[in-house]
Image (tube, rainbow, N blue to C red; front, side, top):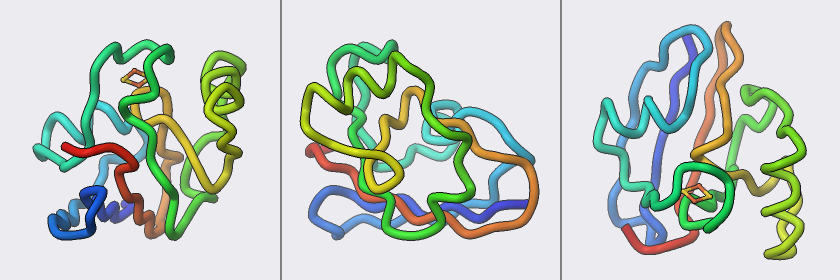
Length: 103
Ligand code: FES
């Protein structure tokens, strides 16, 4: 079961949770009130932009709509992702992400 640590953009708020085997980062954030801001939830606004500090291999590679938004803000995976699009792989692992926008 992956362990995910969410950090606010200033690093002041940290929350570590056990994740289900696979699944959406957005649902995980909602379920645990993670300090990651969301707006559109559909790969258009980049409010949910996150930096992957550790464990990028725990995430399923991004699809084209996420890549388009990341490209538009000059961010490249695997270091940067959109939390509304990212999905966790099943299995063990440690993932640590930091919000790039204020919560
Ligand atoms: S919430 Fe708008 S791109 Fe993720």
